[in-house]
Image 1 (tube, one colour):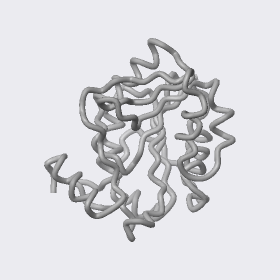
Image 2: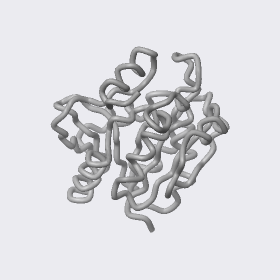
Image 3: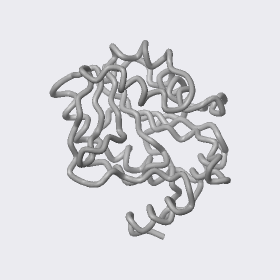
Image 4: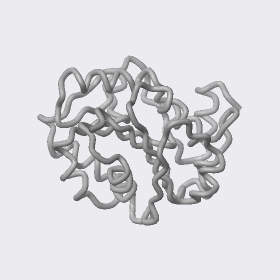
Length: 197
């Protein structure tokens, strides 16, 4: 059984942006490629990349070195469907870490910090707290997988976290919450923050 499997959610339809955001250029790769590179540089034992909307285009812009690719054909029904596809591909694991394919600024160091905090405490779930502002990555222990599998739609994971405040560990990271890309303004801001073109 794997210790912890990272699941990168990169299957969104990019409705707000109007084009597949996974394929937007970021430095020498794409938005999804940059996020995946950071995840693969972390100490996570295994990585699953979930693609759906514009899957072929998205995969053409990434170069997985150790991630397993899972396709989510039901991506239009919301984020929970990508989580289910990721859980199925992850197989047996003590925990999973959820990461966003449109949030490239998280970085391998933060991923490792959250993983270490979860391994030390072994809570039902752990949420990253960027100077008091909650964000990804999230970690869920095996005991939460049943509830994760019952989720539907968008923002369902957030609602699940809010339902169980006593079982969630906040892992403090002393920097600003990384931006996820939903609009062109977000994209341009991310390029500036990452110092890439």
